[in-house]
Length: 106
Image 1 (cartoon, rainbow, N blue to C red):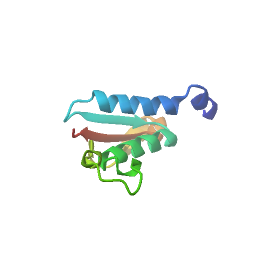
Image 2: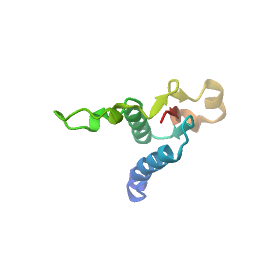
Image 3: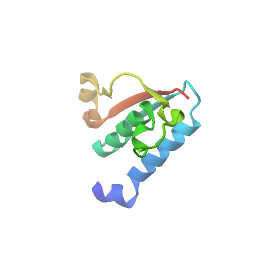
Image 4: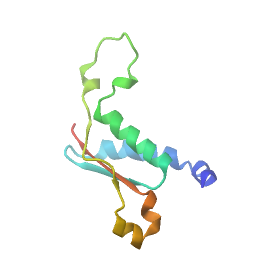
């Protein structure tokens, strides 16, 4: 699995896909992502958190404040959703699935 992820550049594709989805999403639209691997989920979680609190972390220290950079682009909706007991019984492979939802603000 690790070789496949590396050879196919799946994590890089995921990052580019998230950026493209955010750019094409209308204000008020919802970004819903289901990940099936912890590496994927980490990328999705960090992407959503970064855009939910603004681009503060990407700015160098001691520079004048750029108000637009502090405006969040996403609002996180609820907590991550995992497969329920009934789903796990019907589909044991769903145990690794995590769904995260965010709404575009601007």
